Image (cartoon, one colour):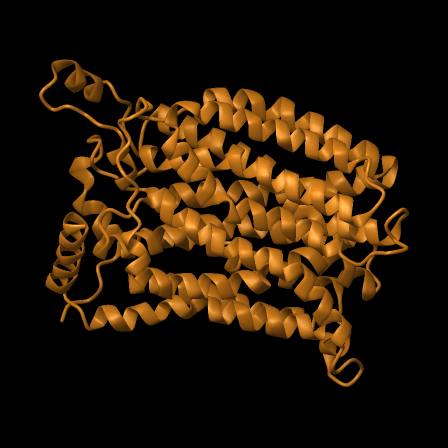
Length: 474
């Protein structure tokens, strides 16, 4: 029996294929005629993948788009506290938590929908992206006129999430073309954009809400989003020519029958149920232990800033370690942070330590998806990176949407308030337990290692060949 093939080994095997359109599953969508001299010239003129000015400029543009789209949802804890304490929402605050989780949930959940739409109608990708940006702008303007929590859920929550999905996901699609050998690192840098913006935006929003109120703040931010993202859309381009209608190959979903995929998915879904709770309740919890508004905002900033290091670290680790090892590191680190550090965070310093640790270990969890994709593609060769990541994002989105109402129900239970040591004796105690438990279950994908130990490389090749034969027969 052989050891599982690490991601870095898989990447190195394909190093000589970096500039060939068949290298990545997503690139199968671009039909290239090997008998055509003009097509050969087109291939040779393509910018190199994984290196060069064009690749890194593309990644920089994606980084800023990522930060702008996700920065507001990941700063929602500031809005949560403001809406709960101010009119017109404070008199009936039920459902306020669902605003933020609806946004993040739809951003994740609609990922496969956006990817499939752009794959089905490739020539309309720019139009879809511009429509998404328009929807984001309109959603924030409408939210600024809200008088009820339900209206916030529909505008700042649902409309923003739908628009953001169609702005954000094309660049996930294109990144698979630009980065092949260093895919894990590239995705880590991309997702670090959320952490950077999540460090700055909470401070800006706290100042804006306190100075001008939510109406003017949301309208101003709508203008900032439109003006900042519009030029980035035009300069962040795909590496390969966009195929004309009719040249796109059929979508392969045979990985749905892949046990490896579902093992990773179950752990991903369970982790998503608890991941967002610290993002939502950190400011409220900080206020409950006597910290100022500034201290509460800084706690959110520390968490998001730490997630920058976490996403880059986890992304890089997937390029060098087996994915099951990386999942265990993330799961154990996140669980210990929630159980111990948050559970006994009764001082400002301790709360910042928790935010730092949780940001590093939990904030980088999504960066493990690229490693999961590599394992899925070992036995489902036609599985496309963008589609698999989209499915994993969708599953996490379900957890995000559910975590809002679920957290409100958990807070009403208060099973051991005043009866447990540390912060476990507060009304938030059950959140610490739930967050830590779901973080631990996020490492469920490590069970895949046991299956791989029982399979050698020939077994993997045989499974892939059998699945391909079945697809041909169908």
